[in-house]
Length: 132
Image (cartoon, rainbow, N blue to C red):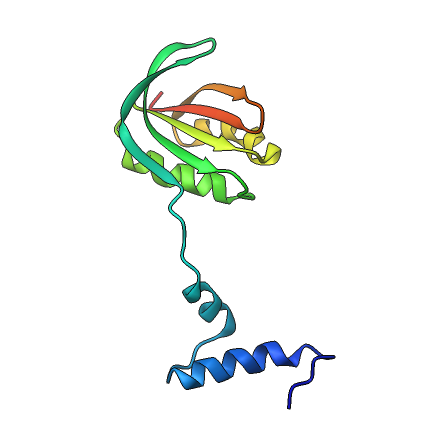
């Protein structure tokens, strides 16, 4: 019944579990439904930070994109920028060099100002101000 050589047993397990629950769902939907999604956007009271080359700015949101591959960092940033007011500053933390390279162009596309990109020990911190 289970044929491990051909990889058939994965699909069989998923279908058996779905039938036992009385639902009919695809394997990907089942897998996504069993794992909790972690919210990667932190909301905290605004704080003042020192950005090199810019000075002191009031930071309202931080987007944690550590471990995320393209285009997830850009999509998370797009979501956060749609929620903040014009003039507010958002910090994006990413360890993916490809994603970091795209943020200055993304800022222009979204009518934001790219304030700075700061390289830390293990990640980059990108600062974006909504509005031009």
